[in-house]
Image 1 (cartoon, rainbow, N blue to C red):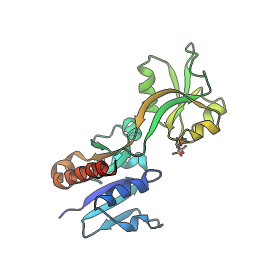
Image 2: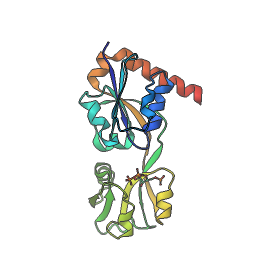
Image 3: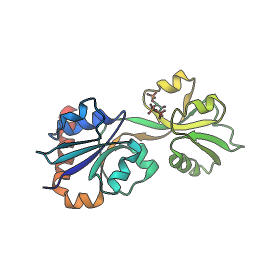
Image 4: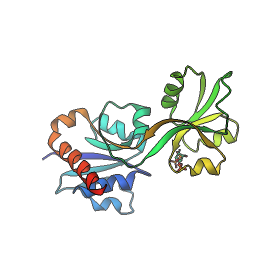
Length: 211
Ligand code: PRP
């Protein structure tokens, strides 16, 4: 039997993502050991996990290096990979927002300077409002941009709100709710349909039980 290849996002969703699979009988305990390995296999179950950057999960799945993967909706909206989005896993919940100093989004007379790691989401959001913006693409710690007066606002995810609060910034506008999603390669979904459907079903059942 072919292996089922699963891409998991490094970072804040990583452990929870693996635990989802472990919880439905797709375990590979070596994953939780503190090592630098990036690929983990369970030969008996014929599954293989890849540990990749969150922003790359969609790429591995789109190009069929992974059959399925777990990724935040923020990354899906930003990168629009050509994959199937199979289910909302209801963890990794946060919000995409516009944030800044109070009132800093109000001056509509001039081009708004927006710092973000999500240029496509920001562009899309402001184009729907016909608002001219200047995007400043940053790779992280975007909250610093308004503090240094490099940007008027940021478009970023907020989870607990601590980062904003500790930097005297606030949410100015909500854009969209975010959570972890299960995605699949379109061809794998067809040819490995049985096992992928089994995963979808077991994940949704395990959620009902834990509610
Ligand atoms: C994310 C996000 C915010 C922060 C929000 O950054 O970009 O900075 O988390 O979380 P909070 O509302 O719980 O404070 P992350 O920690 O992923 O690092 P980054 O700034 O390098 O993107």
